[in-house]
Length: 173
Length: 256
Image 1 (cartoon, rainbow over the protein chains, first blue to last red):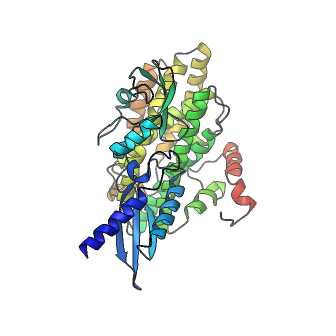
Image 2: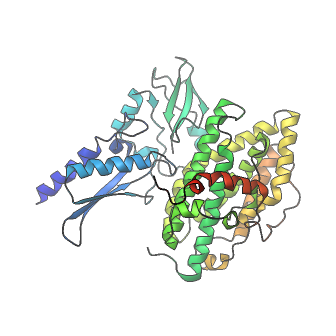
């Protein structure tokens, strides 16, 4: 039984790891850190429900509905439960520190500077955090913040003074 | 869902509606800069900030809908204009860039003071959302503090326009802290950890010191918010209400 439960959980995680972020497809939802976890519960009429807890990166992220739909479809196809629900949760704030090391590398190799690690008590000290980004093309630290707001809520725009490329960074939040 | 009941629940609903409407209406006003902001970076920034505010409004309307067994879309788009509870600060059209910056500066600090305090609320669902919102709002604060300095220290004209806008908006900005009918119940239940008048005093200190540092006059009269600070409506808002309910009204009950 235990082995069965473990392999079922592993199958769910593996399926979730195959879903790409709708706005930055280089990174999976698992590496992005938006999956807080999931539970199986018994339904009153027999059978089981699989509930996934999804933490939005930004409260107003327009990709949330796409993520929910893709998670629902993928896990329904997996056929490990009779019902699948995806619940949006603020029980724990998503922060950019939740992006996994593999996720940070995936961002970097696709041209996004990964966010600065900011620790759990992030507050108003952004002024010291914002100007620091490593150019994803040439690894220079000689970069400047052009705009703390970018093409999506989670991205900021920088310029590298060494390779003279504009680049985007995932926002520290 | 479990939560406060009776008068405390009604008062909490009033608080959530006020906060959501502030974010919603300001989000709509400033989204109008998309495509026509003074510089490209600001086009992107204002669009992003507005999207944040509409997102915060949506999450707050959803909290409210859960509390009152209602529907978030109905609350957002299904009310006549007299039913909105945003502060009078949000009654004005976007006007020019200096006016927009003045309003954002006054509002972002008011919102920051409000959110900081609510992070200690006894109503956990709101605390969870507030903790998340504050991380995003930090970027707004920094951005509009910077713009305040930029216009204040720019040309004589930018300075004069900014000072005039702050003077004009000052009384209506107090209305973010206009008393709520159920405030006493919220304070007793710890939903609101501090009175709105305490928060207003804190806000006055913060905006006052920043205006002084930027060489801008601090409007003298620290007028108390008028009782109708969240119920008074204007022709400007009537127009905006017509705009943002246009799609909903075009096919009542449609879903997609």
